[in-house]
Image 1 (cartoon, rainbow, N blue to C red):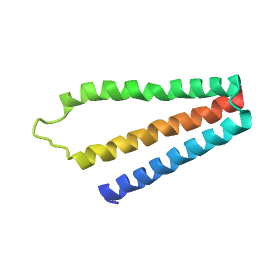
Image 2: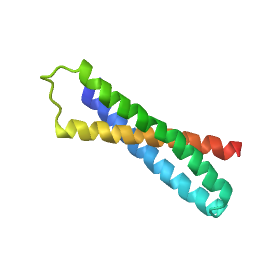
Image 3: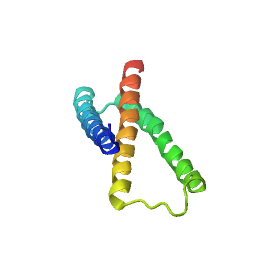
Length: 104
């Protein structure tokens, strides 16, 4: 399987996860009518998902050490990685929302 095929699969998965997250959050918002418990679930899930932002910051600060100075990235490739990153963050938020919804 080629690199472009893998990136396409990851992009489609990222879009699906993002849509699933937003649809689930909208349904739960209506179901719970925005009560304090639902707000606490969303806050905890968002805090858990924000940990990946710190990981990205650390990765971007360390990455130049391991990459050759002659390496270039296209804007399209950076955008693709950014969209996959957002999908990964949304996956963490989705899983943690479902987890905290069952726990609380």
